[in-house]
Image (tube, rainbow, N blue to C red):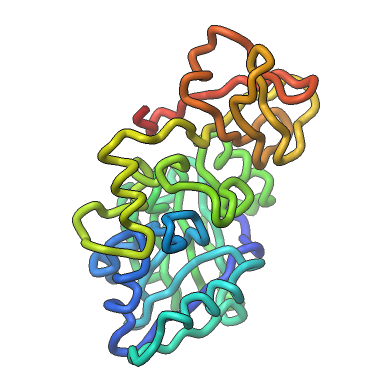
Length: 288
């Protein structure tokens, strides 16, 4: 039986109005025209220089587009989106208090919600919406339900269980793993995790992102790591034979995420963060 956990650290931003879709289409990394009652996507909002600002899921509910994003930064996200509103007929509002966001994971997660086990597959559910994680079907699903309604057929779990699953799969968790105004999308696996549409046309920060892809400029990757010793704090440098090759990000117990130089992942020499041995792991979904 799959597990579910309430994600209190997530927020919802509603983008409505007749220009909502075209408004977002010119700003975010994925193709918003593909979002509908049966499809959700993963996307990012970047600086004009192509650096990470926000990542989020986009889904449709009752004809309005919703962004599932980090709660702690939702206010800043609304502010930045509003800067580009100009004369567009768009309404941008935070709707977190109206809904509960839950992660459903483990064997049978998609089927529990009446979904196909395909990344991004979506459906209406109990007055809300459910969708398979658009990044990776193995990560389970999301349910966005009106406050007071529960996820039936699943066993309650704490958020640590979900975080462990995320770390094992090597999925980034927003600004815990990606540095605001610094991280590049291709370093964080967005190409493989269905977070970029290369055919949609221009979006904010698209020029640098495309240049990195076509010139093969990616030298570092955000990957899961196995930790032997005390878990290093985020930001701890990772060394290999005395050379700086990366930096720790989020983690728990003996698992973590870290940015590592690709040429330091061959296992020929040990990587360490302080007194802790750090072993980078290439995720099955990664292409590098």
